[in-house]
Image (cartoon, rainbow, N blue to C red; front, side, top):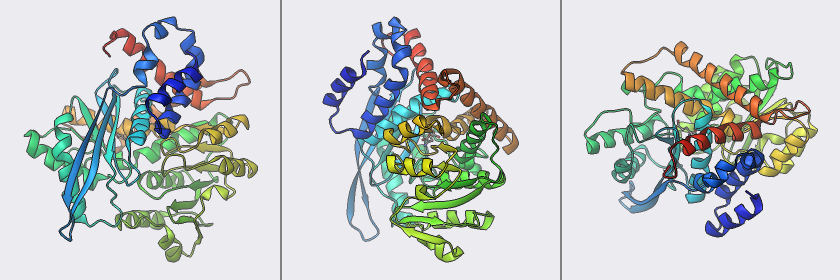
Length: 445
Ligand code: 2IT
């Protein structure tokens, strides 16, 4: 396999799918040498098969807004790869959603899910519907109509969606209700459900909690602790919320949050009251962070990202490509110790190269944020057993899984100078599991 030739073909076939091509190139770069050491992979065309989603559903979602006007959005489900288990991955409702973004997310999800040690394949879906400024009844109507098409293509043993940006337990409740009517069954076809009807304790916090457990282990490889460290977080949604709770519990000081309007700098750090306010802000559907600064007398910096601040740890928790080369340079100049992507593909390739070159601890999203989908896997297990575990039980399993992911990154990512290249480690470990499973099942997989 020769990366540039492989990518040239893929770029021609999927022109303009920037995020998807970016995600593929990153994985190819990491697995190139191990792939070329295994002629059986090349012979079986593993990479050609792995970069192509198994199938993509795309459908029209008409709905009626509160003013009585008809609106039309596009819905998608990308079933990427089910070599190791049923398709599993979130749904994103956001104006930016398109096929390139969902293909990149489905591709990433395939490796991430492989890293969790649980039997889950990769998928992603969603719509270009934005919840911003929408009323509760508009969101409910849209969720129902989205489900009118999607329900035929999912199932508790075939494809299990969950939340992502713009989709939380509220939207999942609406979609689940519609699924039950259409499929005439009551099963764990979604994860991220509310506690009353099959949800799992710790699932809402799990992406952020798992991220902090992983960051703590990264720091430990250098003999460092997390207590007393300053942390920059971007975003203020579910992922940022879970990360802020665990960071505070572990004695770190979270000094930033951000939105599309800019970022807030809160020198004193977030506390319980401020973290609770994040949920209020998110529930308002306005997607701006400035009100935080007004309420808690923090500094508001319009139109900028938090990476210009001097912090010990940077945690992108918002969306893809939210940390660029110039942000990486400024973090490195300011002595950052560790960068953990809690969002998917939060850093651009140039930013990642800069971190690795500077030998900074850098953890990629597919490892750092895998605690979310791992806990979804634990929700599936509880649903299948018709029981509910205590939060201690779920949290203990989450700890174990994050430790195992960290371990796999070290095994496959440690370089000759002792530096742990977590990007390489995560990509190779995830790839090897999926590739071997595909080999074992022949060319149809
Ligand atoms: O990116 C992700 O891993 C998620 N949005 C969660 C997926 C899931 O199935 O819980």
